[in-house]
Image (cartoon, rainbow, N blue to C red; front, side):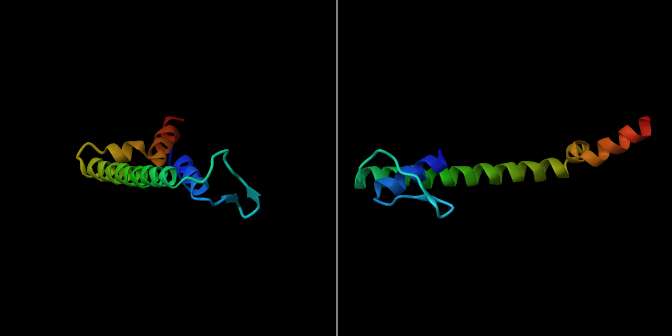
Length: 88
């Protein structure tokens, strides 16, 4: 949703976005200020939502890392590798 809203926002604002400075990618829509503003709002709020989800995820990782059950240590691949090597 984030890239799509940014793409619509750019095209509706009258700018043709290009990929890597070469290939111009346009949409079959006319320049429209209301559409550009709506796409900008969607782009803005989806960006904040994505940031909030990342922060919550990192916070949950930290919380589980501090728990006494050792959830983080059990998920690490080195731990599994040691267990597998001992089993051989």
